[in-house]
Length: 341
Image 1 (cartoon, rainbow, N blue to C red):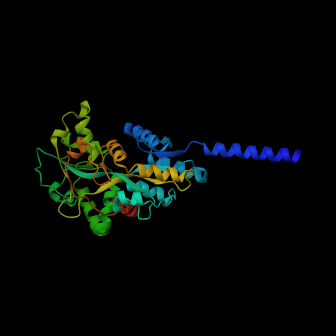
Image 2 (cartoon, rainbow, N blue to C red):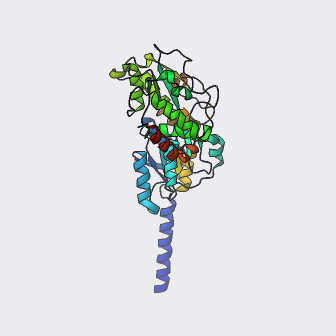
Image 3 (tube, rainbow, N blue to C red):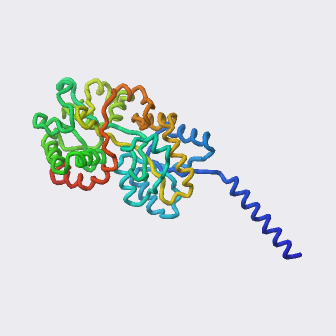
C-alpha cells in the first residue's frame, strides 16, 4: 500500500511539474545599448505576435559586454543589441555570441551587413557623411573621404578623436580597400588639415561649422537629421547653414555602419532569441528600429522616415562590415603614429 501511495504521489508530482513547464511564460532577455521610445512599441508588438515576453536590460555597449562576460555560463542574456560593427566585433572577440543559422536572416539582411559566420546581424545603417559650410564651399568642391586630406583644406576640417569607434571603423574600411600604407597617408593628411584638436561628439563637429571654427565636418547621418528635426535653441538655424555630401559616389560608395544584434552564446532561450532577431527584420519592425535613431533600414524595399529619405539616395560601400573590427587595432596604431589624438 505504501509503495502504491508513493508511486501515485510521484506520478502526480511529475504531472504537476510538466504542467508548470508547459504553461511557463516564454521570454527573451534582451541586453540593449539602444534607448529609444520606439523600441517600447517594437517589443510590445513582438510579444503580441509571438506571445514571448521581452525582458529588457539597458546600458552602454561596453558595459553590457562586460556584464555578459562576467555573468558567464549563467548569464540570462539571450540577445545583445549594440551599435557599430566594431563593437559587435569586440563582443565576438570575448566569445559573447554563438553562430545562428537562419534562412530568413540570410534572405533579408544583405551579406555585407552581417557576420560571415552568422555571429551577428546588422539591423539598421547610418552613413558617415561629409558636411560643409554652404556659404564658403560650393557643392561638388569636396566629394570623397580622400578629399579631406587635400592640402587645400588645411585648417578647415573638424572631426572626432581617434578613440571614437566611428572613426576607427572608417579607417578600418580604408585599410581593407586601399591598404595600410595608403590609409596612413590619408590619416596624416587629415591631421594636417585639422581646424582644431578633435573634440567629442558628432554634433560638436557640426556646431564647429556654425561657429566658424571649421568649414568641413565629418559626422554620422542621423546627427544631421536630429539638427533638422529637433533643433535645440542652441542649434536653431544651424542645419540651414550646412551642406552635405555622400562621399565616394564615383567609386566605392559611402561608408556605412550598423546597429546590430547577436544571440548570446549561453542563451537560455535560444529559439525565442532567434525569433526575436528575425522579427526585427520584418517590415514593420524595420520601420520602428530604424526610426528610433533616424537610421536607414537594412531590408530592401522598406522606406526610411521622411526626414532620412529627404537626404537622398546614395551608393553604399559594400565591403563587409566585419572588417571594421578585424582592422580596428591596425587603425588605432595608424592614428597614434600620425598624431590623431
